[in-house]
Image (cartoon, rainbow, N blue to C red; front, side, top):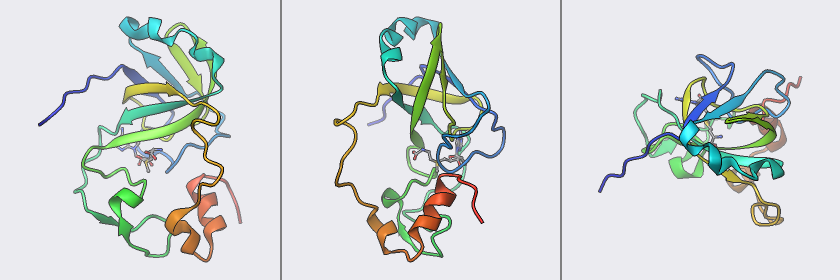
Length: 161
Ligand SMILES: C[S@@+](CC[C@H](N)C(=O)[O-])C[C@H]1O[C@@H](n2cnc3c(N)ncnc32)[C@H](O)[C@@H]1O
């Protein structure tokens, strides 16, 4: 069975060809999502939340999907696609947590995002303390890497030596 999804808006970022691997929270340029007029009423009370989830469709993804991937910066380690955050997936849906800076009409200004400019926005959900953070979360296969902390700097786009 196939299901049809229609974007609820569009993501705007400074990234035309390349985007970071995960959102870079310290990025200073303008990032905003524009929600279609017909859904604007659905934003009521969203401004009360500091963080939100954005779900988006990675519409320019054309690479062949493989069930195993070698995550970047992981020294050639091979893991299953679903144990990774690779954008090359059967359903190329991206999920990012961003800080909600302000809402102006149907525009949501956010902290840095990892989507290309013009990416279709599928959904917005509030990030709720306790409900959405797990104190005992681990790093999965990243725990087995010798240099996990260094890898995390790359993934998070934090400049380092
Ligand atoms: C690794 S994915 C992570 C997305 C999300 N944070 C997640 O974990 O689901 C981020 C990458 O997706 C790619 N990307 C972003 N927007 C895209 C789009 N509209 N079409 C194709 N690829 C896109 C960029 O290469 C970016 O580096």
